Length: 350
Image 1 (tube, rainbow, N blue to C red):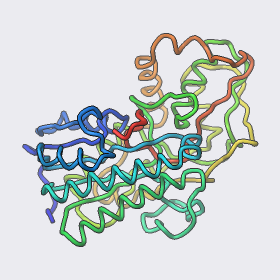
Image 2 (cartoon, rainbow, N blue to C red):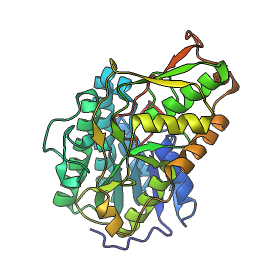
Image 3 (cartoon, helix red, strand yellow):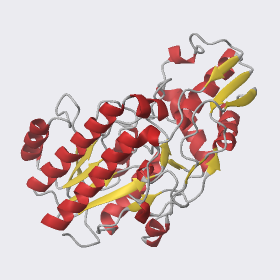
């Protein structure tokens, strides 16, 4: 296994999932490093297909891999597409990790999700809490696939001496997020809904759940910076949480987004909709001890995310909400899986 510090300079670096929110942020951050960047569109290699992945690795021979590819989504997607979330994410992790081992990759980072922790684990969530209790049912399939990826990286490290590490991002947001009306996470969902409510003159926006669950949010560029830092400075079999160490209620967060967007109507909550995990705050002592802390405040991050939304969405998306009266607009995405970290703006595993 490689020792730290690990030198990225001059290395060939493959970002799996470069088309997603996390992958794109990693590509952007790696531009500051002296590396040869490798990416692969799904048309080049479907990461769910074993033969295609093995052939690609044998031909391209990357030295470093950031495994940020995954099928991700909010609470609706996680709960209704269980087979896809489990199969696709298991296949991606197994194919890429094994191909990295077979082809002599020097170092690999697997990006997981804070949903791997038990639903009622003690807060803040410490890395050692994995597999100590039942998972949140609505994102169980995704969580199981991510836990399998973590354990696979651990096993290859133990059996073969591979320098494979795993990191656990908290809930993510920022440029490249997925604004799908059904399958998005809470940050993207609220940005879109409050923006459309503002344009349509809606008097009320209804947010799913009671508004009482607490969530931690990390700007995606901060995550990318943390990943580069850990790739250089960490080599071990322990998980590393990546977050801000601070959380906020969904109700408070909704008001932050509304103020940023400029929506001045009422905000109400629908307790008949699921809340998900009561609280998900990561213990970030390990990453702090390794010399990294988040630098983007929530207020600044939401401003940046809203600006990105305005630049990324086509004009047609600003014409209001189809099949919804202007008096009430309901958010359809709640976050109960982590970011996705991985490929958060795509649904195709790349």
